[in-house]
Length: 235
Ligand SMILES: [Fe+2]
Ligand SMILES: [Fe+2]
Image (cartoon, rainbow, N blue to C red; front, side):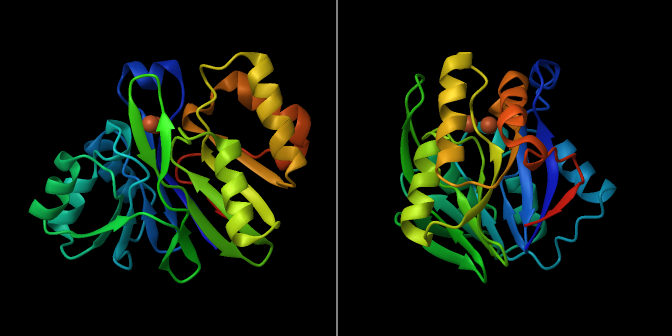
């Protein structure tokens, strides 16, 4: 299974310029659409991302930095199937319907496309309110990989859920892990738990934060990978 990072914001500077968020192509499934539509579209051209075979879009959660490119995309390519958490608010649901997307609401874990699954909606208390997020699981030769938008429900909780559903063999965890506001001790504990759960490779991006990335590197060493915008990983 090939994963391409279409767009990503991860630094304080990125955030200040609203170049924030994330977007992946997982096989032929699009996961999230970044926080700025213009940059999302620019990167699709720059990195020669082939969206012609994309029929399925998963939006991890409705934060602005994951949905900006969605409306234009649906207007240009109508009838795409868009998978939103069932408890997403009415505004985003309306955007999908009004732009010609075919809306599917996700509650429990389900298949999205061949080899690509949603873990189902998970509740998160973000401190600025309750939100619901779904992570994606991709099947590959090595096992199953978990790909997250922001991981607001907690990356350990998400991986535990993936193990419960898909079995012990979680080979890689990739995406925003939302560790940027944690203390070093909290991050050390998260990393210890991921390692103990048998996760083999980590690709921390977006809201994981640089300090947490350095701690991941210490524990996972060469199995903690960087992924650049436009870069592709084979999982
Ligand atoms: Fe985010
Ligand atoms: Fe978020």
